Image 1: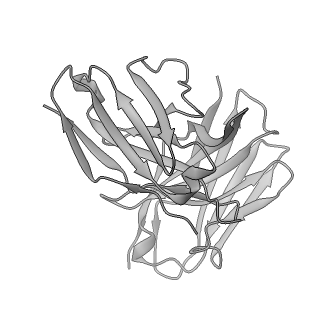
Image 2 (image 1 turned 60 degrees about the horizontal axis):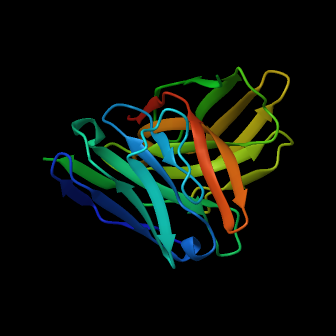
Length: 109
Length: 124
């Protein structure tokens, strides 16, 4: 099955822009979706499709993709954005499975 | 506003069977895939499997031999059973609604509603 690879940790200064990436063969076929998880809480969907935000997700969150890499960009990071971020997609290797990236810990300095 | 409420035993002994149920409130049960995901302490998310309202299932190959996901459409509930548990199965288990997005350029699978999670500990 396919795998999705994320950097384990990323940091950003308060108010600056940060990009979190997710790489995998399945992303050549499918868009990634992105989840934010804060300690002790369930994940929350922040981006799906080409660049769609569920209701209630601030517009500083955006998504993009190129080749086998999907990106989640936070423009003007806030202290409350400090969290773990996970990407996921369907497996493209002919199986209808779901795969998650290993997660990226975002620190807002 | 769709909500998922999950429950099940939180403490198991090795070799026992984990059993969790997730109830769907406030929305349609059909037209979606209903998933189970787990997260071991300090680690990332792992997809366990999914089921639709018709009972069609997909399982993570690494867990397939021990996993059964079933559905009760009369109650808008779906359930997870994981047999022969070991300490490695200790995790927070989440249920979630799986949805699909299509546009002219591609497709996305996403999970837009999650349960609060159930902590399952396997210990002798």
